[in-house]
Image (cartoon, rainbow, N blue to C red):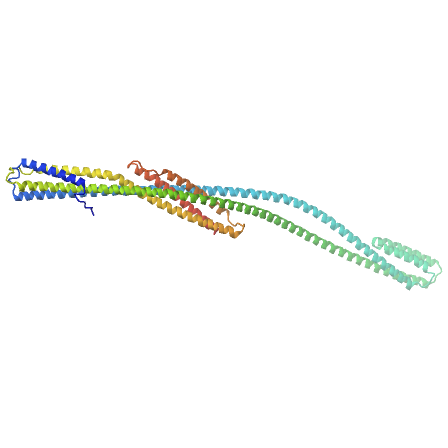
Length: 558
């Protein structure tokens, strides 16, 4: 609804009325000069003239409305094209920034993976070299222990064999002495035979004592001695009975010697079997000792490997604890920095919003004033047309007798007047639209800036909430672990990436605040909108990267 103002309150309207009165008086005076022009006009002709004038006014009004509608349509189409162009540019810049950030993150991951692989390969090479040296030393020690063990085994076997042989020889001597005593008690019947029997027993004792070494020689010597004794006995004057007794004694002695030889052979075979069994047992014991030594070597190797792994795990644990402490300090410092930066950004955006609201209010007032001026111009046009109609009526009806006969109305003159009025109206409308054009540009820029500010505030709030949640989870995990950190290297890499991204965000936000300036001219408004949009796109890309890194940290922890 248009605001209705009274004529008494508006001084400009009073001036317009005075000017209209003067122009109407001048028109009346001019029309008085040509009194005879409309004298011959009839009522039908006057009605036709009025209809033509009303049709001309309606046509002018229709064309005016068409001009306004076409102008506004073209303006809206231009604004829509500019909006689409800005959207396309924003999408292009957004994709470029995302690709650059993704490529940079992939490069950093590749560099970190390469460095970790090199460190792991170097550590494994060092461990392999240390194990080789330890293996050589262990082999030398094993060779020395094997030599000492074999020497001890040989000494033990020789001592046991000598002890067994000495025990067997002692037993054999005791048995022979016992049998000789029995023979002495049972078979010695006469005292005359004692010296010869003593010599025979001594010979037999000597023969039995050396039976293991020279049994055949002793048997031959015993046979020769026996033949000599028989010859001596024959030479003597003993009776045939004594000879038979001596032969019987010799036969018994030979049988006993054969039994003794068999027993000695059986004892030797038994001792040989015992020696073989002891040797077999010694071989088995040596094999068992070798197996035990090998097992000990393998256990020593495994113990050494476990020690190295434990040392490496301790080093990794210390490194992880140090990294977590540094990451905690970095996160706290970065959180304080983000809080300060958000406070500064909040103050800055509040100032900007206040400034934008003030500017929008001023522009709204200007637009309202321009609208009032346009309404006034339209009203003046209507009033002029009414005054012209009233002048015509007054000229025709108030003094019809004094008016001289005039010429009929020229259609060309009417068309010229109509064309002049249309041109004047077009000029005024163009002036008004030219004055309103910077306002439209500025209004669109303000809308875009408000949209960017709201989006940035939302992203900053989301990032701050995510960082708070992440730090809360980290502190809870550190409290629960009690110094036993179970985080992996990926979490530390993601936290470092997050700090790098947030540092980049702070730098870009400072650049953004320094890049926002007030445009000096209306023509530079479109060129100023693009840098702000580009900075907004960069900030939103950085914030999205921060969110992605936080999600990766959360997944790695879970």
